[in-house]
Length: 147
Image (tube, rainbow, N blue to C red; front, side):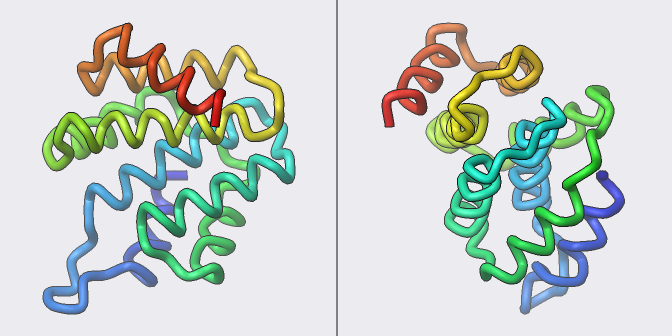
């Protein structure tokens, strides 16, 4: 999945000034998509949630979001790949942005009305890698669930 997402961003989301790929955009998309595909059940609600979140957080067109979602439909990356994305988030996101990302991940997990144990597990691992406290992990979960 990583190679496909990188190719997508290289083709579609390059910085107009220097043609460089935004690492934090790639990392954000990869983490949100990982939550979407981890349970192997892609519900329409999850697809709508991830599409809206990607469009808002990464300022992508609906066509770009659709293509990115299609690339990841049947792909689940290895858990070891999380580190490279969370490293990018840690380098570029302040604490508030990390909390927004965590809440967005929870929204994707709750979008289909069922929280799968794999979704919760991957979000917990990401929270640990982002150096978020357990209370913040729970706060983001409750905020996403109640919205």
